[in-house]
Length: 139
Image 1: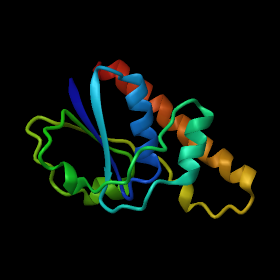
Image 2: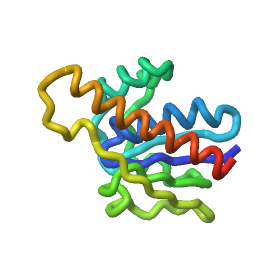
Image 3: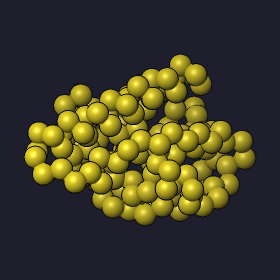
């Protein structure tokens, strides 16, 4: 079984969404971890839009990357430019490092609830497609 770390700045939204989809898509093929270079808590909109797609992430926690330094990862996926640029060294011997930036919907200044949900869904769907492509390429 492969170990996969999904990393972003706060481990609250994009990495949590990827974690949820990779858990579902790679069931019994990989152990998925997600972390941030900071912790911002679990984003309630991320939880909501994932439930809308049948994936429950409300049991996830926001974790620091330092908590996983002892795990030998096969893949380290950064899902935001900030984490990719500032990520500390993770001592995994042969980890394949992959970067794919996704726009952070929590940073958008949108007041209308329906528009905000649509931005989160748009981000979620991009991450879902990316996770499917990841599976096809590496598994």
